[in-house]
Length: 259
Image (cartoon, rainbow, N blue to C red; front, side, top):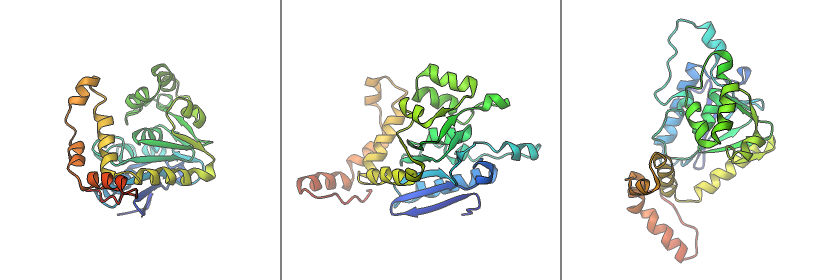
């Protein structure tokens, strides 16, 4: 797997993806999208990897989104997007392993949409978030227009979307969009702490919980509780279910197998 524009490594049970185009504020062009998609495909398929962390190279930008200069210089050339969408994640609706965004600077446009597609957002205290597409005649077509109003109050989301104005990391935290704000030097350590705490839980329980949380949102409460969620079925038949019970009874840490 090529790592020219995205670095990808695994440590313990955590996969780390770093968008590595700091010279263009980690904006993504087709080759970078392809590398992100390939890395996330690898993460999804690896039974030994339970959590992913996505961040950007440098300290100025998580991602400025679409590389508009590249697009302008390559007019007339088909700009292929992976089936999994912008950044290999915006349209990836079958990944129930948790993904953490470690936002190390500005997250604008598609960069913000990558973060919105993650399950947890950790932000450096200088990070900013925006959907500025209308200012350049575009729209947030990678899920931003759908996800943002679901995550923060509609009027505030519309205010951001219709003006393109950014919000700070602290404001994002106040709105419930950001899970934690830390000093820039502590960002990756914080993301690793969250990943470690997730890995202390049963991976099958975590994935079932994510599947239910995401797929139940379209139904009223009673109907949502009557739906079939395949990962819940897998959890109830798993070895890890009994391991958790036995570990609790024996007052020891469970040894999760993920099966």
